[in-house]
Structure formats: C-alpha cells, structure tokens
Length: 210
Image (cartoon, rainbow, N blue to C red; front, side, top):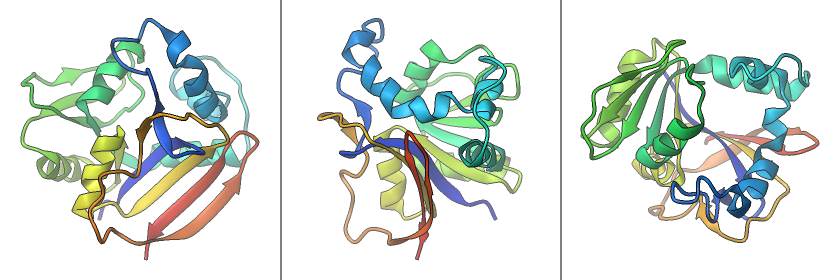
C-alpha cells in the first residue's frame, strides 16, 4: 500500500519558507532570494535534480544525488496547497517537475491543468481527506508526497496519516517566515530516526513512525 511521506528543506531554526517569500514579493527576490537559495543550495547542484528539471547536464553525484533520485522515483502522486501551487506556477518550467498527478487543496474551482511530461494538476475543493483518497487511487502503488506548504503538512500531521518525514536540515537561520511544526494537535504522531546522511550543505534526516 502507498505510504504517505513528507520531503522538504528546513532551516536550522525550523522554517520552511523565509519571511517575504510571497506572491506579492515574487519580483523582489532581494527580500527572500538569498535565504531560499541558501536553504536549497544542496539540491540545485545535484545531477539528478538538474537533469530532471532540464536545467543543465552534469552536477554532483554520490549519496545525496542517489537520495534525490530515490525520493523522486518513489512518488506516485503529490499533494500541495494553493499557495505553493501559485508560487510554483510562476517559476516551474512548462514541463513541470512532478511527472505525476498533483492534487491542489483550494476553495477555487478550476479544471485540471495538464502539463507536458506527465504532470496534471487537479484542484480539490473537498478538503485534505478527499485529496488523499484521490492520490491513493492514482499513485499506482507508489508513495504519496505531501509537498507543502507548512499549513498543508500540518493538516496531514494532525490527521495522523504521515508515515515518514524526510528533512534536509540546512545550516542557515531565517529568523522568521513560516514554520513547519506549528498548529499541531496533541498528542501527535511519534517518530523515530531511521537514517542520517551528512552532506556539505545539509544534513538529511529520515524519520519513520514508531
């Protein structure tokens, strides 16, 4: 059966998104670009990531690159929130990077948006449980990634359905923004450390349910 997991980058002080990284400030990267770049610097140099997004050939190989490849290849469907989709819509290439069905939680009605390369965005008005149900149906036995943002991940943590957390902890401090572990109900799911991979720009942590 498909597993439900999270795979994200996180600052040392617990933020997924820096202050100022909003649609309104999208054309003002001086407000957020340096922090976001520092958070994700470990990823953009990896060969698999660069080739999967058709950015360029070449890049770093090794354990971190293998981790990126294994994560992408296990995904059969993605779930994200409207805010993440709207920001991604501005920056993703035409051949969107998911290559799976993507279920977007939103209150707005919109027809499915089909992109080259196997990505189709479906806009779900019935809430997170319905999005997960549809994702399981379409994943073909592969796993389901809760892509973000923080609020969406928190909703699924509160539902108790997330089975694994993959966190790339970068040695940067944001000092503000949107935190990952907020608004959680008690008692929450309990995780144990499954794997730690130290890289030069991030420590890769994998937690699984106890």
